[in-house]
Image 1 (cartoon, rainbow over the protein chains, first blue to last red):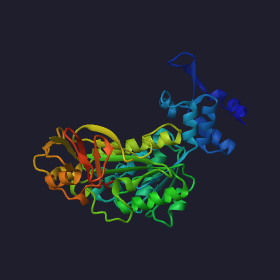
Image 2: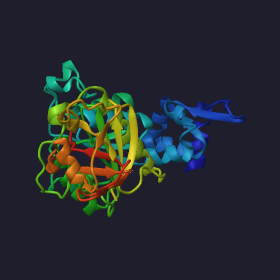
Image 3: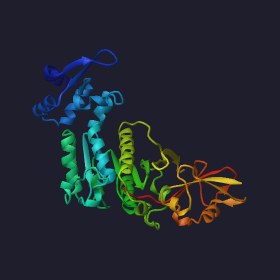
Length: 285
Length: 79
């Protein structure tokens, strides 16, 4: 299969000098989609097979240097589930689409309103009233049509989370309330899906990666179902810059998890403080 | 003795004159525990979700010593 692919691609592969010597072989969208049609494969899978031959899709070649061809192929064969498509989720979705994930699941039961416009990267004046998860599908398809997106226009809960997390190697907690976050964590633990928690209030953000069996939200907030007063965001708001940076770290952790690289580590919380211009991590253990 | 206190998010506005860049040096007398420090600062224990002392997770009865660095975090759940 792979050698046949190489043969078919050959006329459309461009060779350039690689920065570190030798040559770099590139293939464009047109050839990828044409092959996908001929071979009845997903474009993301064609790209992954190209990468196995050392041929980079042009749309991803600028990742080369921090991602090996093997890393990129692995991302193209990965699915992340982003739960919440608001301030954190909107940015995380866009980053994961651009980094070249092969598949995303986006879950959000909400629709855009005017108070979302300050920070939710998928919201626009002309999209008010539209379902966030459906907007995510259109936006990702426009950014990276090789990324297959499944939209769930519903609130994540005990009953639907098994279906929502189906096929995902990582989940991103981009929710906006602690109760829902605990429900997601419980489902991730039961289903064996690692997840990346992100939360913000004012100029501060927190990121934590939780693999099944590792300490999680309880270390930060006390036991689930324990008396959670309102979070600090009720007082400090959810401003423009903070979710972008917090979500970027969540996307980074998700990519590192998918690639089997070391991330923050068990029980470690990253604390982002944009008021003190400080980034620190600490252990809950 | 003195401890160096850093407050996070909504706890900052609860302590008059708190400077996010500098933190706050608090003069205290030994023996003192984290919960006593909260009392001195006028913070309720239920409003503090995470306590770190010198970069390590600590409980409310953790004893404090001269020069300790204490960081206090509230619940944060926004997205």
